[in-house]
Image (cartoon, rainbow, N blue to C red; front, top):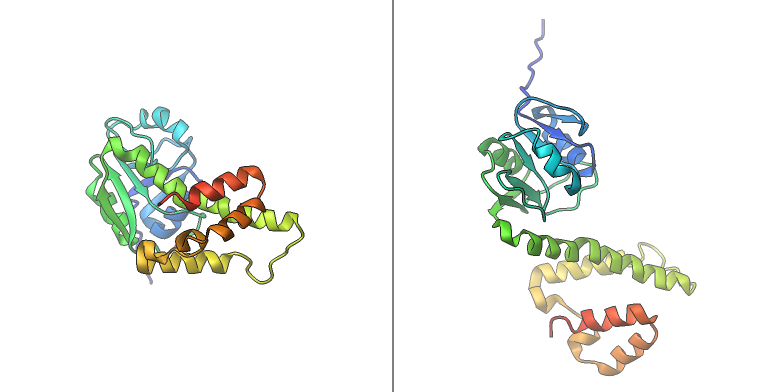
Length: 217
């Protein structure tokens, strides 16, 4: 007779959003994934929107951890993975994990098993850290999608993968060389091209184009 070995559940993830589903898929039988209305025993990871955190954290005093990058709750440790979740388990090797407060050792190890690299983030720096994350992720995506929409509005349909190869090449260059990886007319100081390009943009996008272009000058 074959015997099935059952792994003990180490903690519960509360919240079935993209972060909760992705982490649960990666940790597998080590965790239980529940709706935010559940009231489990033991250690609880709160993978819920920031607005729901204070009320939920109060229900699990001394035994919960939250994932919010910007919000600090006194007495509640935080582990914020610096990535963009899509609900699926991914390769998170060398992905930073911002830790604020006393994160339980078992949970720190669990994140490490997935490839996350923990570092200590003071509570007062969380908003700045999260703003940098938003600039890198949400705002960058807005720029790419907005650029595509500008072209599409004028009947320009890029073939293949569109702007994505350019975005990926730019990220590779910056990863390899830092600021040296930047290219384009602002880096070259090509004012004639900058003026011509800016004139072609609607006013709101023109302002963004010029401010971002000179943002590191």
